[in-house]
Image (cartoon, rainbow over all chains, first blue to last red; front, top):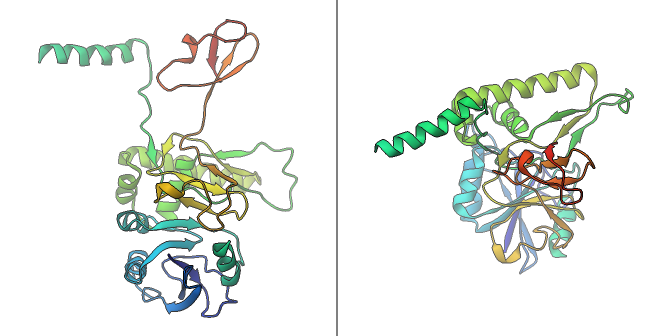
Length: 105
Length: 191
């Protein structure tokens, strides 16, 4: 199962980004093959509707869970339709590494 | 048709005669916040009364000022009329302003609201998640811990006994004044 995490950088040490739609990178982790990949967020600089654009991008990658600090009002209905699970993680400074370890538990 | 009309009119008359307010429509909240309170720093907060911000009020500020939606879009998302939305938002802003100016703690809790799906909070990793897959509802989606708690979709209200103070969970549709205290069998009232 693939999980996307909103990241502020493209390394495993980078911390979580506080916003979902406009975070610069997504860390996509596959907990079956234990591999992770970083993808640049195509919606990062979008004028409006960044959230739904980002969701579509992640859905194409086959993501089933999204970890972020906050989900906007426009994102929620799209995620519901696609049956993607939302995980709200609102603790500042959590690195990708920590999240991946939690997912491995 | 006339019978239906009569029944309908009778219900309205009962509301008018008893001066009962119409039951509140539940406001839809998209997702709960992952924290419970805001605490100001640099002032002694223990002596001051806290400001209780209802979840629907938190949601109205989030939709309007964080997601930058207008009232028409936001009221649709919360499933209430525009006038009601404006009232909720107004009350939210006043509470936040009061807390800011007077340096009070803002507690986010309670209100008349519902979620579209179940939300859970994990006490081990501090995450909040919704359930998509019914089979995996008993463990945390992030850390697989089983120390999780369901977010109650509406704040629980209680009926209190007038003589012994016994608290009983309020059941919607059953007025507190018609309930009987299971301990001392005296009347109960709304807490």
